[in-house]
Length: 219
DNA sequence: CTAATGATGTCCT
DNA sequence: GGACATCATTAGA
Image (cartoon, helix red, strand yellow):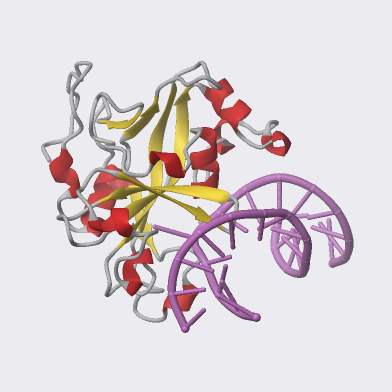
């Protein structure tokens, strides 16, 4: 993964997959500032674009907070697959969460997308949220993992999709104005995984752009 | 503003 | 049967 800074981004350029072929915690940090693009679908005629502002890294069988902690299962199988693909799961029976698979094939790891700052297609995002949430400000449309997936119309049908391919209807795009400064990035413990015990409950694998208004509630 | 709680499906024990 | 990588709503200070 190369230097930050302005770069032209011709249409049809694939996202650099090698970014996801390193440790999940390193890759997660590098995902901050990257754009998630969802092409229009039947229900949402607008293109939707969001900047990733909050992520969490999850490891393999050793990470007691990871879905991969029990080894391969039908649900977590995508985590053991090739890097750069989507792993989407359902939490609490109703919310979808989008992850980017990292690491070499056979080694489970993934990055949870926890919050996005809407850049384009805010109306489509609002329409995709549950009825009660449609009076929100733009920066709240995708703040939180369940909210982000809902705003982009993501569900388990997207699992396995190659997020690095320019042909995918859901894909990643490098930021046209470069990666954010380290000074804007903060790390802290992951949310909602107290059951994992130490050191997993405290390891600082949640990364966020501190000055973004679109962060999730549990800072 | 914070705290409590119900919704709801899938996976693991 | 219990727990869950959560969210929206309601109740209370």
